[in-house]
Amino acid sequence: MRTPVFMDHQSTTPLDPQVLDAMLPYLGPRFGNASSRSHAFGWDAAQAVERARASVGRVIGARPDEIVFTSGATESNNLALAGAAEGLKERGRHVIVGATEHRAVLDPARRLEETGFRVTRATVDRSGRVRTGDVASALAPDTVLVSLMAANNEVGTLHPLREVGEITRGRGVWLHTDAAQAFGRVRLDVEEMGLDLVSLSAHKIHGPKGVGALYVRSGLLGSWSPQDRGGGHEVGLRSGTLNVPGIVGFGVAADLARESMEEDSARLAALRDRLLAILRAELGGVELNGHARERLPNNLNVRFEGVDGEALLTALDDVALATGSACMSAKKEPSHVLQAMGLGPDQARGSVRFGLGRFTTGEEVEYVARRVVEEVSRLRRVSASDRAAH
Ligand SMILES: *Cc1c(COP(=O)(O)O)cnc(C)c1O
Image (cartoon, rainbow, N blue to C red; front, side, top):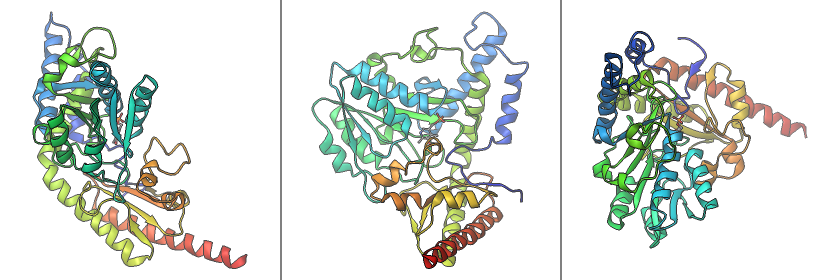
């Protein structure tokens, strides 16, 4: 086993070797522009892109022509919120987003507010889940869009999307979901769940960074407002030369995720449960953040009473963990997700996220558990003797 051990798979994941193999020719001799219609280089690239489009769509029950490639889930979220709101503003100017969304949804939502939309932030319960009834009662005659993440990137909690989808579909309101974490890890189906817009990212499922997709239900295109102007690529929704190697990698990563989802999920959930079991057996004051059942198989978020998460991570220089989302870790503010769940600032600061991936081994889990037990015990002894000295 090699150290440092990477256990932060909600921030990103290592490339699957099969994905790398599939990408290499497109970084080499197969370099064509997928929009070149006049020669074999272009046709080859276009064919590869169309194959990937089908692979990505298949994971969520979407048709290939409903998949728009982007630079990642951040861009997809921006495109979804701004494009939908701009296209629908004559119908209404009210949008509902979840309180625990990723910044890539919360920031565009604030932007909408600045341009005259009303934004309702749906609160969550102690486990990080919205109550379907709260979303239903927040709907107003002028609501045009609801945006709720499929799985939370800090605590792994799954929202009741299917129930919300039934309500939004009945009311003619568009439902967007940021599925960067759920894609390829839990079952998603755009028809069954009534999803109209879905944001996806390749690098959360052992694909390359800098590529993602937005699913756009085909019937919506008439109401869509493109957010950029250029070559009119991707059915006019997103201009710019396609990142062919990245898209090829995304396609293969999507195939692998679909084929191995059941097996990977069962294996990772068992490892995650083993990790929590060891922590609880060896330490007191260990609390699970998030939902006990409705959650990602590869995430564990726990708080250690009386321990500062940052201090713990600093002590654990041989293990890669996080206190919150990667994009927030530059700031020292306690997590907005944990606070929305009702945790106080100190409880939020005492929380640590473990993220497992396809290549995580049982040996690594045992090692991480042992190291965390050692350091939590040590930090608690230090603060106890500090208190005794005062
Ligand atoms: C990682 C992540 C994003 C950002 O995705 P990128 O492809 O890195 O832009 C957005 N939302 C969630 C929930 C994520 O986990």
